[in-house]
Length: 637
Image (cartoon, rainbow, N blue to C red; front, side, top):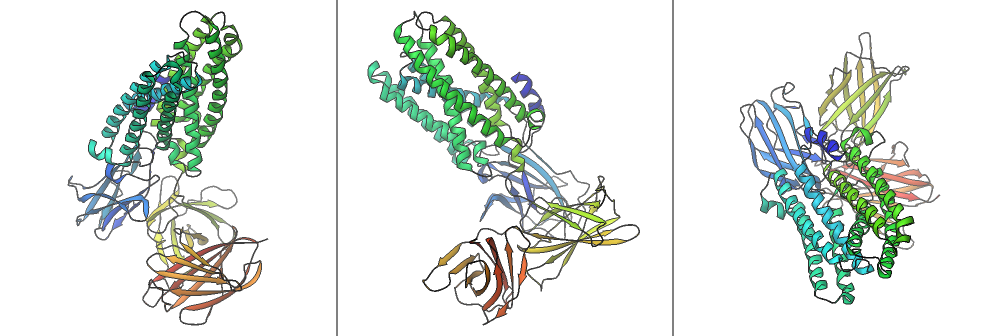
């Protein structure tokens, strides 16, 4: 079953673990001159030391300078400087390793300098084919940790009959072998040497796992030198070290790439792994310790293990379901993706193991005092099926979860309708941040929802918070699927924008207005409260200064808000023009009237609504410095 599962995945390409979200220059862009650098933004944090970016012309000559570096303030991005480029088409190829889970992703796209790149290679982002070698390495590591956990649990609960030392030694050897092979696999997939790998975040995670396994080995050595009745403390050390190794393993896998509740997700994965180890690894130690004739002590050990295994089975089921829900985007993923097929294989094997465990719990445990053969037979079946389930688990660690494609930086999606309600436009982008972006427009009939197939579509971008900035235009190209696309940096800065789609049909043309707001990076807010005075919210604006927002009242209803702008030296700065907008809950943003009281201070009068309210201030100085600050307030109901 598992061979059939892995074979198709190993022959093709897989959805990327850390896919490319946005590029600068954009895919398919035609530039008037050489860009200063290539900047790529991914869905997971890349490790610069293990990543490579190449810029190659049609003659095969590379034009990048140095190595890719992290972009300050943007951990999801890498940039690399390039030489001056002549007229022509250039291909950007990249290979990155996620600093979150250590998986590699590659991709290519083309842009032109005073040349049309439309006939160049189509952009692609792929994960290298599933490596059977990597799956084997992960299986060795997981199996080794499972045996170490089981040995530690058997030693503490005293149901291993002394054989837990053998199981622990075997587990430590398998874990070390798996770590060594995993380092080799990572070195193969990353464009870096062994030494660079070990100095990167991925390598450090492997070294920490090695250290935890080494501590478990040292505790096993101490346990061997003690009398059987004195080994319990040392075996507790084995268990704790194995738990630490599994925690590090969970923190270096898919769980750490979750887009929310990251700590809880890692803990859930860790608890799942630990429960599997104590259950299956403990069973292996128990079976090895049940050699020979039945006895009262062996029957008592079986009963102790049975109780512990029952609790572990429940924990495995609950955490396994929770993790599967988090990594799958829908039911269809179970049959249509390699990751989902691996989940199904693991579930089927777990159900088989649980069935044998039930037979042992209800029949073999009661008979253990007189006959151990039924327990040994069913228990051996559990261990064999568990070994296969661990292969599925190793595959899951190497395959990209389907839900990963939906994570991290979100895009924009907005709908608009023309004044006569005849045309409906759906506009989407892969990123909600200002700067280079790709715009995709679906033009539909308002009543039927069918594509209209207009002759031409263009977009007009008007900044609502910057009235003195001129509008820009972007013409979209029609694709074979009646979808219009185009790339540009028209959303040049953060704030509110009106995007008007100009839809030209054979007989007439219509305008479809839409409003979007690009994402603002988190800003530091210093709060000063003095009894009897309004609260002063001082908002830090990177490289531009500060804005003080002082509401006279923070209750629902009319209020007066004072706004004072400062430069980077915290001196009040002259403001040429200012826009103040408010938003209540998920409602539309409303521009508010503003009265100047000094060159740097203003007041605005409006009404707060109960619940979340946001005040956004956009000011420009005579020198052209743009200061945008946003303050969220929760107004009592």
